[in-house]
Length: 131
Image 1 (tube, rainbow, N blue to C red):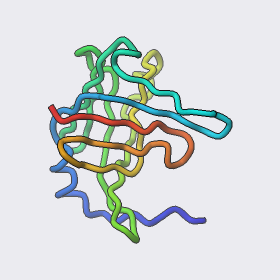
Image 2 (image 1 turned 135 degrees about the vertical axis):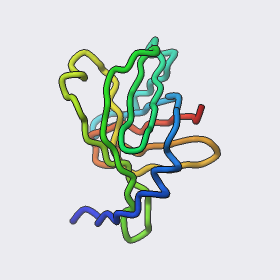
Image 3 (image 1 turned 120 degrees about the horizontal axis):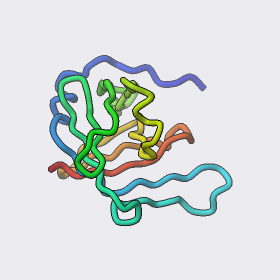
Image 4 (image 1 turned 30 degrees about the vertical axis):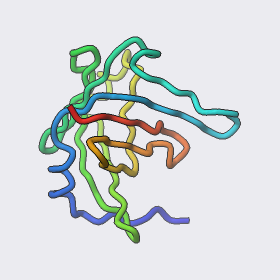
C-alpha cells in the first residue's frame, strides 16, 4: 500500500503549532508487546518543552536545548489529516539524548498537541500541552 500523498498547505497549520508546548506523555507499542510502554516527565525524571518557530522546533530538556529540527505541517489526503514532518538539523546532538520527537499525523484540540508517531510502528505517540 502506498503512503498517502501530502498536500503542501502548511502556512495556516504552522501558525497553529507555533509557540511552546510541554510534554505530558509518550506511549510506545510495537508487535510482540503485550501493553504499551508509557513515559511521563515524572517517570523519566525530566521535563521536555518544544518551542516551534517559523520553520524550526527546539527541544529543551530541563531548560537546556538538546535538539533542533526543521519541520513542516502538511495535509495527508484523502481526509486532510495533519502530518508533522521533521528533519533533524544536527544528528550528533541526539547522541546522548534519549528523547525523540516523533514525526506523524498530529491533532490540535483544546490546547493539546497529539502526535501519532507510532503510525509506522517505529515511533511514539506523544502528547503535549500548550504553555
